Length: 257
Image 1 (cartoon, rainbow, N blue to C red):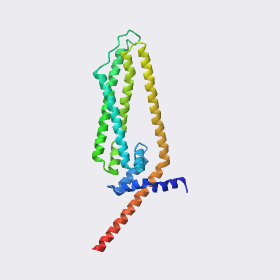
Image 2: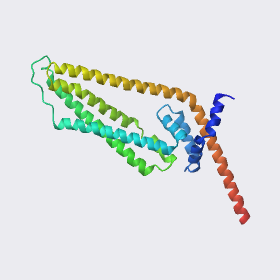
Image 3: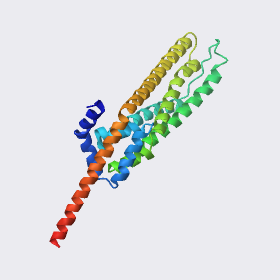
Image 4: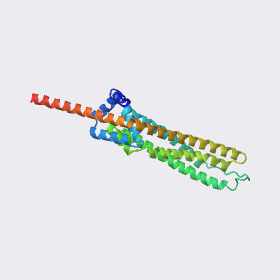
């Protein structure tokens, strides 16, 4: 027996099949739900990860995880937006030291102001999108059909991008503010140390993101066909069971009549 066949049998005999069977049995349109899951599994975007989570953990657990992630993201975006807004309300004073940065401080302050406003804009957009996703998920998501429709309609890419850009603007504000407000040698120490720190953090985040994408791509090629086969098999079994139950009820009614 091949490894793929063993994996198929294990999945069919596990709670994974029970999750799928429950979703199909209470679905508004089980056939459409099956097609949606298959199309999401075949997708190369993050929808594949959502479909995997729904199949392996259940749509309730997946929805709770996404809500927790939205809340955490909203709190971080709101915190940094508040920090940036405070910097606008209480603007930085330009240092009057006569050093090699004296002719650049006015330009640095203009750049700092632009970064503050852009960061606030992206932070507010991220917070609004998070609130919208939370409210709408509570109002409109009551089944696996609703959840998959909601996820396909409200992608996380825009929210994540706005939050990341808000953080990037906040990070860029720190060395820029050092140029505006400090004199030598403090300005050089703060500017180069904070710049190096934020660049390293950004590169580490980028490395983690790329590694995760490549890892999931590898997992996709290995497990995509197995999960698609599992979805179709459970759907077929559920459809046959429903047909048998419907035929039994019809026969019973005929006997009574």
